[in-house]
Image 1 (cartoon, rainbow, N blue to C red):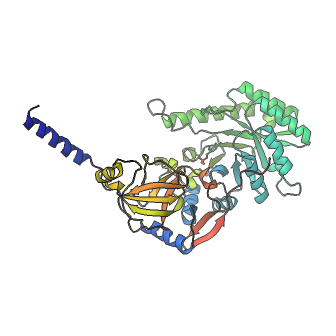
Image 2: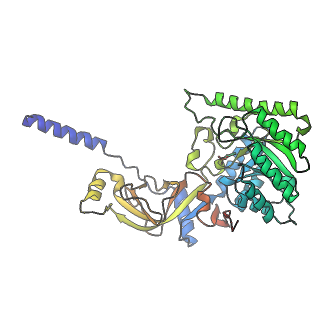
Image 3: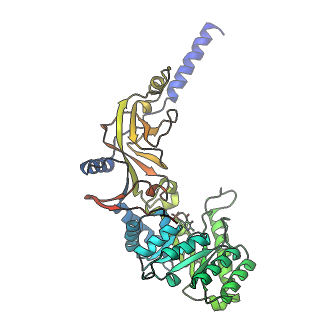
Length: 426
Ligand SMILES: Cc1ncc(COP(=O)(O)O)c(C=O)c1O
């Protein structure tokens, strides 16, 4: 290459490279997070914490009730809001005593704490888990499982197991049958399967009571629209559901009555079920705290209400990567967003950085559950012991990871809410 061409090419490369340099995405805490930081420090909080903003939770509950079709009941998905006081707050804000549980220890805890509740299992539990529920449920409790608890059954085989349990315990079990409305995660697909289950229930009315259907439609809106639109998936799911209800009415009329539970939907789909939907109750949980997985256009009216707050352990300029090469310096020179380093208390959660804006993990340095590195364009006034904030990507496991949840309102920390316990022994 001629010397002149070489110079031109190199200048072009440098210029192109310069133009591709990342912009500064950093910013100090907003007033909201600045205030949270002050509140946490004033309260001498010095550990990673799960914060629940009660005002935002309340706002989400109002939004939810306004979007539930008038002829539908609402059922709270407990796994996504796993704390007894949190569930209690939502029960009173949404005026429901219906709860969906997915875990035997949580089911016992909810029955004990809220004896007026109506519990529907959201997944078919191994029959031993059902037995453990009864072993642990105090006989003097006002929660009467025979009337207030619906076990979810997904096959005739499991129904036989539950029947054997009912006979062994000499109890009557309420049976809700799972339908496959297109999600293909389980549940009955055919009328023949339903016939088999309902016949067994009819023949053993001393031990089994049919209580309804549950058909979850999480696939609706998830397929690329050129394969199937959300409207079409929803219409098909509702047709399947309605077909099962018709079959029940026509072939097993003795089992049909107005109090049956026809449950379905979840955060991403509940608002799609208008008055014409065959469901009579809709479930949702996650949208009330809105983790990042629920940043969907359909849930734009909901606001994030749960945050992780973590103290900064070390705040230092630059980014240092172990080894003899000055990789960190070169990186910070190239990317303004790598000019400052925070090591935080904990890390590696199912969560995304939220504040200060622009804070990002350093994949080259790696993740840590003990002290994780994050980079920023500047310190923005944040020093060791100040807090940085994250938004959980999902709530069901993250809310269980931080010990007592700090339930905050405008006055600062008002309450410590214990998360549900995963189980003792059994
Ligand atoms: C059976 C069932 N219903 C409803 C939901 C919806 O829960 P959420 O609103 O928290 O997404 C789920 C979530 O997994 C589910 O499994």
